[in-house]
Image (cartoon, rainbow over all chains, first blue to last red; front, side):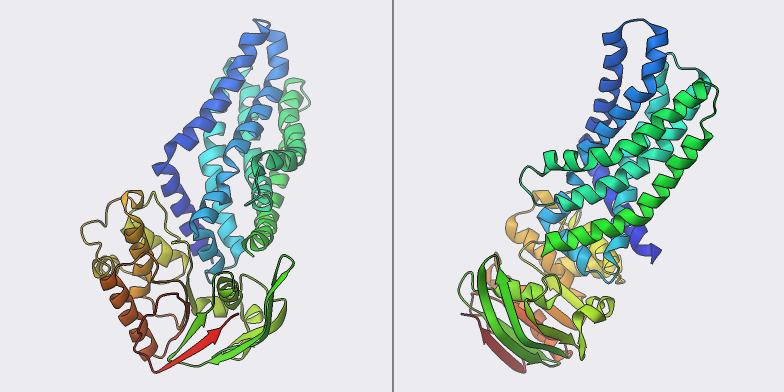
Amino acid sequence: MLGVVTAVIARDLKLAMRRQADIVSALFFFIIVVSLFPLGIGPEPDLLRKLAPGVLWVAALLATMLSLPRLFADDHRDGTLEQLALSPHPLGLVVTGKVIAHWLVSGLPLTLIAPVLGIQFDLSTEALLVLTGAILLGTPALSGIGAIGAALTLGLRGGGVLLSLLVLPLYIPVLIFGAGAVDATVSGLGGEGHLSLLGAMTFASLGFAPWASAAALKIALE
Amino acid sequence: MLEADNLECVRGERRLFAGIGFKLGPGELLYLKGRNGAGKTSLLRMLIGLLPPEAGEIRWKGEPIKAAGEIFRADLCYLGHLNAIKEELTPLENLMVAARLADETLSEDDALDALEQVGLAGREDLACKYLSQGQKRRVALARLVQERRPLWVLDEPFVALDVAAVDWLAQLISAHLQRGGLAVMTTHQPVDIPAGTVRELGLS
């Protein structure tokens, strides 16, 4: 059963490595958007510290959105999606592999670069740690929820805009608890509660989203 | 083995066909014929379970394909209009990945041998985006060389192939039928496939 998940992950990672421009452009988008804020606001450390979690999280949501339309579109266009749907494995497992691969090439790089970007906002070490942890815990949920949107808008004209309208509202809980974790830590309340909720959202979305996406994909393939 | 009863297909507001039925046993080949837009591809997609029929039922080994699910799909090999190959991967990688995702064991030697048979020797390590249309089609067809699943559903398999490749593919399908396999295919080209029983189904 797990063989198909690792096979899909291995395939998608190999494809991503052959098309590095996609990974790099989403990552640079994240870096640039986050870096524009300190430049625009000016050297006011208090204000920057307050803004940092929200800015990083909103930029992470938008950077994730960039790569979502292609999650299933390429496979749909060249016919491999049909073959995946006809493989003897449940389609939900195949989609699980695709979601994990998507996180590895979009969410993981964002997580790794986030602490470096946080320094621009004069965040304390503790706040940086919590921020990175929150992004690490929250981004898989972004990939999972995004997969449902990508599957529902597959094959539609102007699907990209519709995808944003569909998915961004669903990202709100992740945004609130992700940014909230840092605020709570800075104000001394402790961010554990927020982080636990983020983890719960990630587990729920990784368990549920692939099967919802698979149902949507089957309709798209009819 | 493969039975269809009273199938009906509606696409949009139009009814493409109704009351289509057939029975196909081991070693038999079914040709679907009909003009463009008659619903040949729709019927094929029904047979593989991607398109639910408006009415009627399709059974594999006596069981409805929807209920048989994974058991049916493990017996099925489908080759569609699209080649289902990844442009960024090499022909060899494409074959290996496709086999792994379909839960088949394919050794690298067998894959190389299959590529040689379709005339792609020397191009195993070239990304597929550099291949011509016909060569891409050959990469897709190379999957069939080691394919031992009993039911082949082929949508226009001869498109974009030269004369020698058409003969080669006809031999391949014939060998599959002699092993007791079943095949359903559409084609506009008259191709002579030496097989035991050839059935024809016309869609109008």
